[in-house]
Length: 248
Length: 193
Image 1 (cartoon, each protein chain N blue to C red):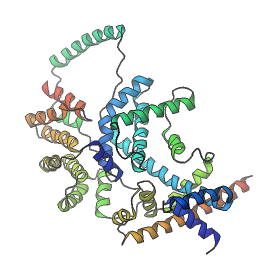
Image 2: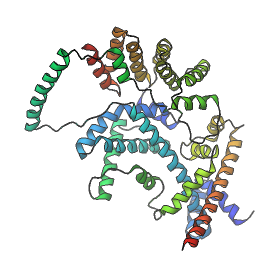
Image 3: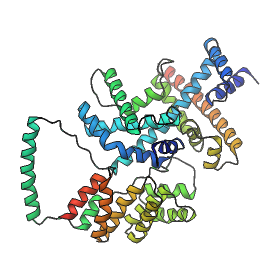
C-alpha cells in the first residue's frame, strides 16, 4: 500500500464520518502541514460537493414542476389613501364587468371549468433520473407518468398499488386515470388516499372535486371543494375560485 | 402529523412531506417577500425555492432536528437572511441567481478560496461521465444522507457491505475521470496558447 492509497483511505474515512474525534483532530492538524494530503482532501471535497450541487439542482427542478400546478400569487398592496381610491374604482369596474359577464350569459360550463382547472400533479415523489439505467417497473411507471403516457403509467401504478397503497403512487394513479377520463377509478384512488390521512389528502380532495366536475356531479363537486376551501392550503384559493365560478 | 414528524419524514427523504411544506407556506411567503422587497412573483418564487432547499439541507445534515419555533418562522428566517445576503453582495436588490447561489453555498466555503469556474466545470463533467447507477449511489449517500442499509435496499444490493464497496469503487472511478478531464483541459489550454 503506497502513501497515496493510505491518504485516500484517510480522506474517505474523514468525509464518511468514520473517524473518532481524536482521529479527526490529528487529521486536521496533518492537513496544515502535508501538501499531498491537502490536495487529496480538496479534490474529495470538490467532488462530493459537486454531487451535492447536482442533487440540489434536481430538487430545484422538482419545485419548478410543482409550481406549474399551483395557483398564481399576486402582490398585496400597502394600505394608503390612494389604495382606498383605487379600491373604490376597482369595485365599480368589477361591478360593471360582473354585470356584463352575468347578463351576457357567458358562464363557463362544467367541462370548460374542468379543462381550465385540471393540471396533472407533477411527479415530485420519485423523479426520473436522467440517463438512469434502472429498468424497474416502478421507475418505468414514474417515467411514463412524466412523459404524459398515462395509460401505461396507470397500468403500472395499479400493479404497484396492489402490493401496497402508497400516498404518492395513489395520487399519481388517480391523476393518470382522471387524465384518461376514467373518473370512477380516479375517485376510488383519491378516496383511498384520503383514507390514509396523509399530507397529500388535500391534493386528493382537490382532484376528487375535479372528478365530480368532469362527471357533471356538481353538488358533490361543490361539497368537496368547500372542504378544500375551508383551510389555508395550496388549493384553498383555487377551490374558492372554482366554487365562485360554479355558483354562477 | 406534527411539525416534528414532518421534519423526521423529510430527513428520511420524504418527498411528499417536502412538497407539503412547499405548498403550505408558499402563498404567505411569496406575498411577504414581494411586499417587503418589492420584487416580482417570479423572483419571489426563486427565493422561496432556495429557502426550501436550505431548509431541507439543514434537516438532512442534522442542523435542524427538532423545531424550537415553527416551520413557518424558520422558513421566513432563512428567507430574510437570504435576501439580506443577496442585497449585501449586489449592494441593492437584484433577482437571485439560483445556480450561482447554489455554487456559493455548496461548493465555495470560508475555509478556502472560491473554486475556479473551470475546475468546477471539470468536476461536473466528470460526474456526468460517471453515469448510473454510480451517480445515484453517491448522491444517496452524500446528499440524501442515506445509510448503507437504506442504499442497499433502494438499489437492490445484497447488503450494506456490498453497497459500501460499490460506493468506494464509484468514488475511485469519479476521481480517475476527474483527473483525466483535468489533464485534457490542461493539454487543450496549453495547445491553444
